[in-house]
Length: 135
Image (cartoon, rainbow, N blue to C red; front, top):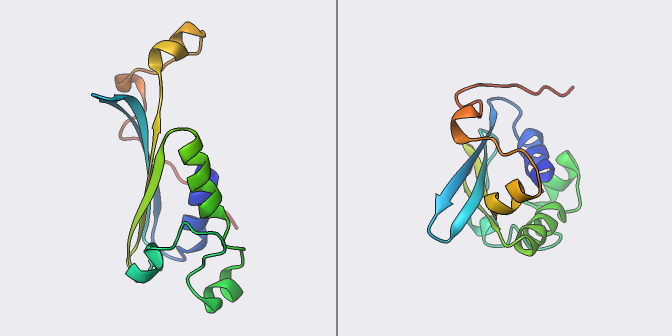
């Protein structure tokens, strides 16, 4: 799911940046992981956003010819997100980029009980920047 969203962000951003932000949120309904992928790519029209997560949906035929793909990735990503009890949503401005927000519930006490390490908020590399380059 995350790889799909990041791949799309990189694919549709010829110049500018793609950023990934991940944080744990302690809410009244329980803990969740909030993931945000922002890009400065081509963006999307509001009409497309309404059907973006439907199978076989792409911006238009020129996008398909130029960038490839089947239009299934985001539909599958949303289904997977829902199976995990989370959600994925998008906001976008044509010519200015898109932002995808993913929210997934987590049970920190169960994670600790199973012996998995849990990074506390202050130990996570907040403020650090990274870059990924693909040719």
